[in-house]
Length: 133
Length: 136
Image 1 (cartoon, each protein chain N blue to C red):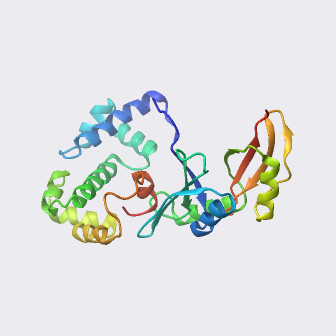
Image 2 (spheres, rainbow over the protein chains, first blue to last red):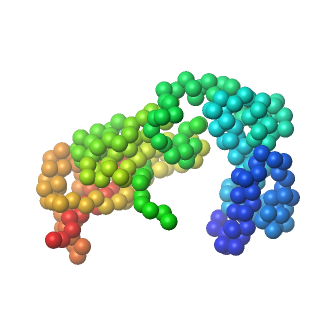
Image 3 (cartoon, rainbow over the protein chains, first blue to last red):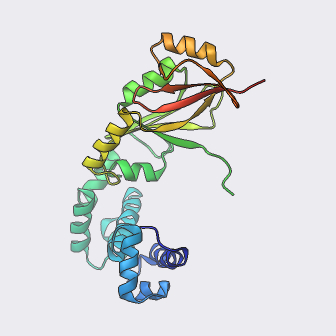
């Protein structure tokens, strides 16, 4: 859906807030306020523009952040709370559902692949679009 | 400011076959060929243009494309629905002769246009490229 520029700019403010503050508790009301829209209207426009609800978007940003920290060898419990989840059990379950493996198994799987951090530069959007990384 | 185009995607049906086409038929150079699990990052460039990498991306379902969309995209590429760009050459007639002998498919022989001499070439997946020799 193509929104008018002004609506889109408002949504971008809320989306930027997700990326800046995903580690904190973020409620729909907070995000709607960023966008200067009513929660109901914000939810509807956000989903139309980005194809998922603000909550699902926020969860995805948290999972992506968790993947980065896991790759950097941070302990799973730290990762969970650092990216804004409130309970280790729900984090692991959600991570497994979205990524296809629980956090520790995901890290093992990545480390077992024949690639190091010095190897070819591959833009993340391609990896994210065409693989599970 | 955005300064230059460094990478561009060409969707291909089979990366081994595409690599063979772009390297052994067109004479391009491989910039990167790296496999990470099921994901293969394969880029090529014309010999004189190392700063632009053409990503030969396999059409495959994933987070961005569901299975049905990937199938549709593959069919469209194979059907020749996409024009992917323009290559410049110093001698389009020679390229046409030599590449035709190697089995590269062209829409027809080079023709004069206001902007140069041009033919249209298809890669092994079905993607079209204009091949142009500028006047003078």
